Length: 470
Image: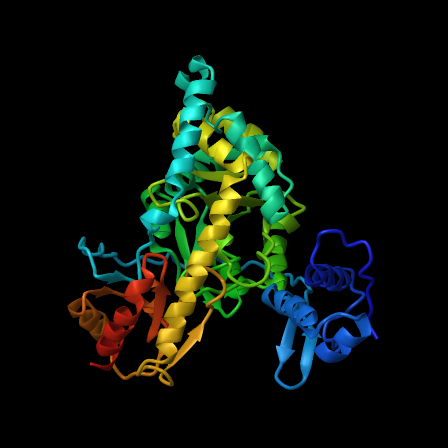
């Protein structure tokens, strides 16, 4: 039977160690596609560990696409073979329908917008660090324009954070700090070129599509299956740049398996101007298992541009985001765009650098994760005890700050949204995030719970039940 040693694992948990051992054997093809792994109980007995340890390791490997489970049959190794697909002539450019802005009103409960409870942000710590920065730094440094990439202290702190939290070995020089991801999307268009087609997910984050289109680039909305964007459809589009959210897709919550990630890396390697933009927008809030490894961390061809933001982890008002550029693009960035001044004040950057390097960010994330887990669990418990129990299917509840609620109903999404408005609830459906009508998926609510208060949840669920049932 398959066996591994648990000696000298230092501070690593047993399930993490087992997960790494199995993953390494799969990548080295010691465990081959289709091979069945031992049952959880037999494997645990053979290794001398608890069944929970084996179960947790298997669950993480399933989430990342290295294993798949068959009911009552066990766990099997996925096929990670990279498939080559010949490019086809691009179809006519699809037209994006006009997107109506959401009504600017305050709702009693909002399941769409992102916000952070005021008592959750560590104001006292932030103010203390701000004072320390103001009192302790050279005045000339605080008052000078920052470089286009950001100050060295913050780039170093982000580099250290990515290594500790995401396992990414990044030189600080590869990091570009900017005032929000929307600004950085525009920077990438200038860096990579407007002559290329940009592919985005359908369904997806519609504001991203509008940003690309307003920057005068051809934008292709690529349909998805249960693993993410369909590779064949990407090839057919003729796009050169691919923008994806592989660790937690919005709005479906899909976690892209490793086999599909390798397919996209293979796609990118076939063209000199092909790049993948990996948007890791809420990676800190995976509520079960380990964080999903980034696409950038398995990229050996320097084809992945990583982008992330502190707007989700701190608060939407913090317009501080960053890029991680492949090393060969760093010189191009400073040669072509280095004339720009930094878009985040030096004072904010220095304060955030200290917040990261002195351990306050990690403590804040742990606190926020516990807060969001409690909100999610309370919301799920109320839904399972509500009149909707047995009429809904809940999915993707572990991947981030929203989950999907699939309704068994004959009413249209528009009817339910209108009824929710009358209940002073703001709802959104997966169907709202499609560009193509062909694959539009109805009756699936996107339940973003980050802006709720725990005391609101019972009444919010009661109002939701009335809106759904009519």
